Length: 236
Image 1 (cartoon, helix red, strand yellow):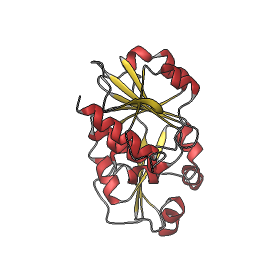
Image 2 (image 1 turned 45 degrees about the vertical axis):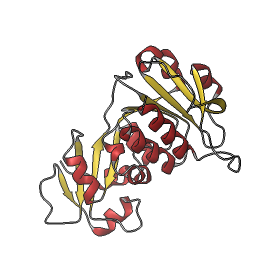
Image 3 (image 1 turned 60 degrees about the horizontal axis):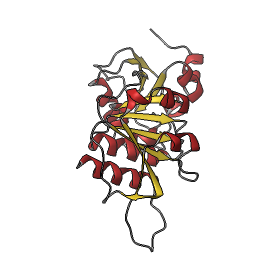
């Protein structure tokens, strides 16, 4: 199975990849992680004539690899993978990201969620979670996490399948150090960096919590705040 020049050009376009359920992974480390996972590699594109062990290898020129890559100094391998679709259902705790646009925050929160047992991650209109920046800031964990690309309507209609109680980070909430948390599956909602949690997602929340901190600091970055909340909840 060999890609035409037009198909290679199409793969450069994020919208094309998303419409076809594909995502791109760059570099030896992350491609090796994908190879050892249950994610399907549709194409392996490389300028390394000695590369073996990957499915559907197609040799490209260094210039073609560079044109596809998003990194400044691209490595000689890119895997085009099939996006996994998971049902909207959580077995344990979960995380909801409401319109986060900073890839660093998205990657950090995916990494923290995996660290603290929030294994289902629902993303509403967020930065592309398969972008190179998100993959790197999550230390590659975005390639292993159960990620759900959803709408606010999906969350509202599937509340019972996602969690027993929903917790939102809010500066006017009760201190997370003092609150008595219920048993059962919990879902933490983290809102947009500038606008916070939307009104619809705020209406979903059962509990509002804040992080106790010095009065010298007005607020925390979304990635930091969400990570602290999940760590606190993992101790309950």
